[in-house]
Picture 1 (tube, rainbow, N blue to C red):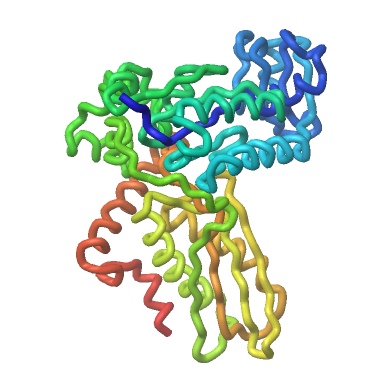
Picture 2: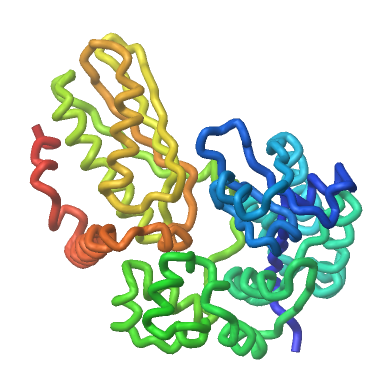
Length: 388
C-alpha cells in the first residue's frame, strides 16, 4: 500500500552539524553551541559525543562544564544557520509550494500531486534528501505519512539519518509502541506526570477516555487525538512571522487614563486570544500602535520566550508593549493590537508549572462558556471599565 504524502525533514543537531561541516576537527569530540559571554548561558545545541556525556539542549552552560570538563564551547553563528534554513526551504520549494518551516532544521512538505514530475512520494523524498546533503552537508532524518504528527514521530524514531515511508495501516502500530515522550507536545514536566499515571507509551495515552483526557490538562484531548495518529492540520507555507491576528479600539473621548487604556487592552486581548485558542494556537509577540489626538503615532512591541495562549499571559505581554508605545503625554484616540509569531499552543504544555494548572483550567472553563453562549456571556469585572 502506498505511503502518505506529508514529509517531515528533521536535521538532527542542526547547529552542531553545521559547525562540524565547517571544522572537521570537531568530529567525534564533545562540544556545544552556546553564548559563553551571556551571564545565564544555556546549551543551544551539542554534538553526539556531548550528548553521550550526559549534556542536553537547554542545560545551563555552567552545569554542562561540570558534567563534561573540557567541553569545547562554540559561539552561535545566526547568519550561518539562517542561510542553511533558507537553503532547506529553497530545496523543498523546488518540489512543491507547500513547504512549512517548523523550527530550526525542520520542514513539513506536502508532496501530493508531484508524482508526474518527481515520481512516487518515496522517490521524491529520497531525491530531496540527496539534494539537501549536497547543498548543506546535513544528513536529515525524513519520514512520509498521512499526517504531520505521525511523520514527526517517525523522524524521531529513525534518527539521526533514517528514512521511512508509512502506509495508513502501518502508522497506528508504529506510533503506539513509541515512548510517550516522542509525541509532539509532551515535554519533561508533562512526561513526569504521565509517569505517575503509568502512561509510558503513546498507545497508553491513545487509550484514554474523553474524561481522562480532560483530566490531563486544557489540551489533553488534543494530545490524545494526536496519540491516535489523527492530525488534520495542513502543511501551511505561510511563515510564522507573517501570521497574526489584530484588532483595534477607538476611545471616545480621547484619553490618557492608564486604567481605561489597560481595561480596553484587556478586552481586546481576551477577544483575540479566544480566537487563537479555538484553533489551538498561541502567540509569542505583541505589537501595540497608538494614534494620538494630534494624529501622530507611536508603537511598541514585546516578545515572549515561549508561546502564550492564556488571557492573563497575553495581557501581561500586551501591557508591556503598551508601556513601550506610550512615549508622549498626549491623549490617545486609537489603539491597535497585533498578536503575531503564531504557533501551535500544544507543545508548550510541558512548560506549565503545577500551580499554573488552576489558571489553565479556569481558562478552559471560560472558553467553554463563551463557545456555547457567545464571547460576551462572561467576562472579568475589570472589563466594565472598557465600556466607559
